[in-house]
Image 1: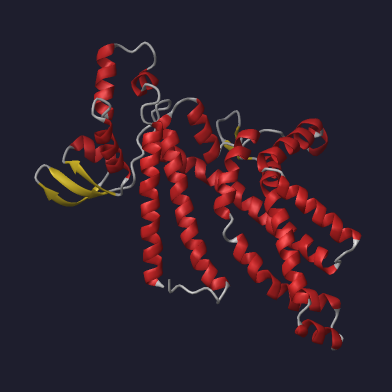
Image 2: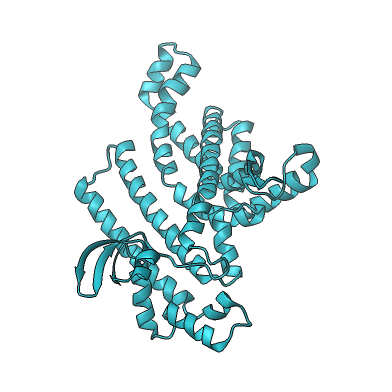
Length: 351
């Protein structure tokens, strides 16, 4: 198992290096970082100083090596107080005027706010994670419940209605559901529902304090959870029908066990194995889907910060967000691969 984890970890490192390469060459050369940092009234000498500080006066290949050195946790730096303060590294060993150091990935600073990009992303991440987890919990509870009902009432009007609803849910993207929900329940029926069509997880009161607003989580959660609900419904229904046709279920029926006992204590327990295995792999997808939902509902999480940075040509934030998200995807996929073996004994780590 340890060998499998190391192998997956190395694959993840290779993926992230590829992402760094693509991100750098995609964003590098767009806009004028000095102008974006200083504004349009900056003088020539100041612009040249900023370009030198950012390494923009060097060839593109050298700039890429500098950027790679910034984002890698093990990197090479000159022994200066400025570098020590900038990167906050721990020296592993020294060779002449340079040191090999261990540090957190340095994603540079925002052109707009001058704040460290990593700080901005870490502050925004919990809101996106809360939204994604809320959508997963909602989708799991509602999807499994409707899937069981559809399986127990196979070929009935209820079963057909649930199937039609699930097909409609799968066919529409999350951002479309978000627009519809915001328009109907947040705008037209806002006075009746008490829900806002925009708003973050926290609001600032007159004293500058952050106040938690859980009601602003309801519509984004529903919008993000519509498609997963539909998928879980169909997966649960299919798995339940397969289990209900097994011989041990017929034996339980012959023994006179109640329908509740047969469905929930015998059938559902065995039917949930493939459902739970599939659910465990969807968190990364929900994190990605949250990007569009956050823009629609003005929910200031990771996606909002990223898209706002793109609109303002704040490329360090956009580049850092892409790398940050890619790292989360790699980490989540490694954890999910390990969970597969725990949830399904047929999965082998000997690959």
